[in-house]
Length: 308
Image 1: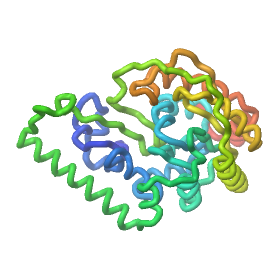
Image 2 (image 1 turned 60 degrees about the horizontal axis):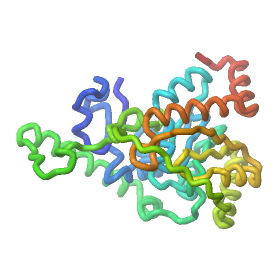
Image 3 (image 1 turned 60 degrees about the vertical axis):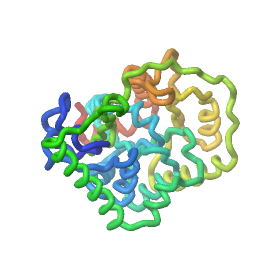
Image 4 (image 1 turned 90 degrees about the horizontal axis):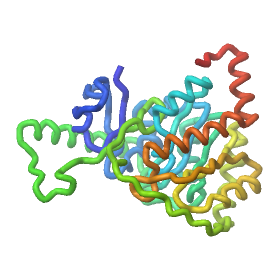
């Protein structure tokens, strides 16, 4: 059965080594247009099947693009089979608490846990594309999504008969892509991460921002009033993460902050597949040992919910 996927350029679904069930045009639609921006419209207006999957989630992951590359689909499927918990990633480019909160509230999402990558997440300033989504309409967002999709679909079939000339193009005309699973929202395939750059870690302490903390308090109170426990984390990007631990203490919430050395990025800020695997392993080693998480898993098991 084909999945509905998000992809930067439609022609890539026909290029190996993609799995065969992703090569059927009837099995996918395009959402990550113009640098992964249209994914926000899909989440906000519940376009496509992704939000229906998010409604089933026990655990939502929120934040910017760093957790998108840190938590990958294969690892999440392993954790789901092990615990019986259902995960969904609502992360997006530059996402912050105001936009994420609106997606959660308007789409009636009630996860048991919300994992927040506390990297500028509580900045109260919205990005222009977020404002556009929030002030637009379902029809406008739907039309943007599918006009782009069919334009690229036409371009793909045109290229089958009229070759595209790659002279003077970067990377010999190679297109870069990321594919996001609509079943859990996590990255399952990409061709961006060929390079390896070691982190330059800044040990300088970062002071908590009072304005950000006010937003964090409101977000935590709102989510907990709906039955969702907030957990803070910080995907490594070179900054000192001690402020996250301090912010969690002041908010009265849990934090999961793995300590790892010699991590690498492919662009200076996003983890390579090897480093993301190490980070995710360490993260879930801590997360699954939290008494609050163990209690939920045990209660589900006692109710007869399947755990593989």
